[in-house]
Length: 396
Image (cartoon, rainbow, N blue to C red):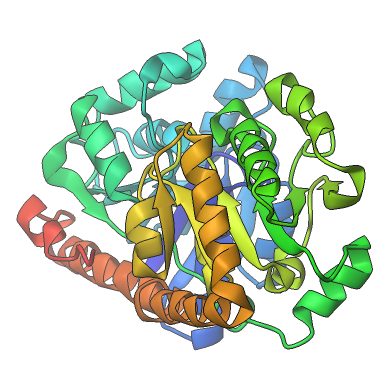
């Protein structure tokens, strides 16, 4: 079966990471799938990763309104040349582009939309993206299936008018051989960042954005420290080394020797195993946060706010608290401190076991394979699949 993955861009992001991870796994397993990737925009970091895995990659060269028509012509030519059995379109712009790329074709090619975005409030999105989302909702009966990576996103999009009978949930998957505990992980992190080994190393890995609510974590850490918990806070991610807003106002309240700020970290698998715990303090906007699965796979216990599917992901192997409640977050940090290293190690082991059982890349790839078979198998016979058939492919 030939599958063409159409994606808006191949930069650093959750959708791009999941696509690359899925393709790498399929390649290593040596399956019968023939996959290729078409990026609407010139590929970035994730594009290099796709090429390194040996997957054919081309782009439409979209870089503004002036390139729109030539880009769409390249898209149609790529579809005509590839003659795929199924198109998987990742992210909203690619959803609509796939519609245009297969429009007026004599032979109908089944299309699946892959939604990697959660929408707590459409008004929080940029005006241009709001328009794209509304257009996608209007055309949402056109694809044979709509894959969401979280139950929260499926509910939210259903309320916005996306066809509910096309919905199926396949969560993110994680390479548990790459993300795994390391015996010397903590010692290495302590040495690399000059951290006092007696401190509780609390990490957060995310971009500096209001939805991530870094200020909530800083406030909570300050409260925990006043209660006697010796916390060293390690903040990593895009612009985390550039405090702004309330984040910038509160950061001065923490001792300089108990705070480390780092920008983008290229290999989280080398850093996460050294943490005592990871915190995701988001106020809104989460669907299935990759960082929770990655940290849990490294046997790091997690505290997350109850946003998106975080409660479901963490389960009994961590702690979930209400968003925007620094007092509750501080209590959770103190609970983790009181467990001691042995208690946190047991919780971390349970977290890793949960990821291996429910969110391993092998299991998630098998779920996609089942979806491909359901839709692609019907495509061979009739170039279509019924919504009831598609829903049978839902795994979680």
